[in-house]
Length: 230
Image (tube, rainbow, N blue to C red; front, side, top):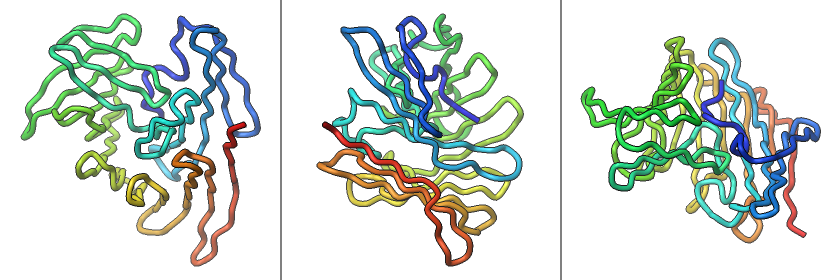
């Protein structure tokens, strides 16, 4: 399942897509906004309601810091608000704007509305009938993702730093925070460790992603990616 409302670059921008092994690379051909995006797949959950999280490395934003130091997690489009205008910053770096409540963005065919169901929420309703709930403070991570089929992902966070994603099927994606960034992602199914992702930095920028399959006390590296700036 993907929660990106528009994958890669804006549809109006000319780009090419190239796959290098399991990596998906998108290159913007516009000279005034040249950029490269690399989507790094992490793992797939097992059972029903499969999640396929990835890190999206954005060359233009590689020095922007954040939880993953230049990359974004595919399930974390963030919401901010200025006056009556809402902005959704997607993991690929694109930004969608919504002019007030219940106003459809013609590019995404989505809209935002306000709800109080025990807490104040801004809710993004997309063209597929999925919903992303946000708490009403600025630059908010998603609080819950509710899919049209009824599947619910709950994102647990504190001070806008995520600690885990859970659903009702025994899946847990757990984040370990190393002072200023998330350095490890662990996937558990019914309390059993199955995958571990280690994130490395060079000069405070994402430089490596190591993915390990976990069986009991054994860990086997199944993918290793490096990012080197020339």
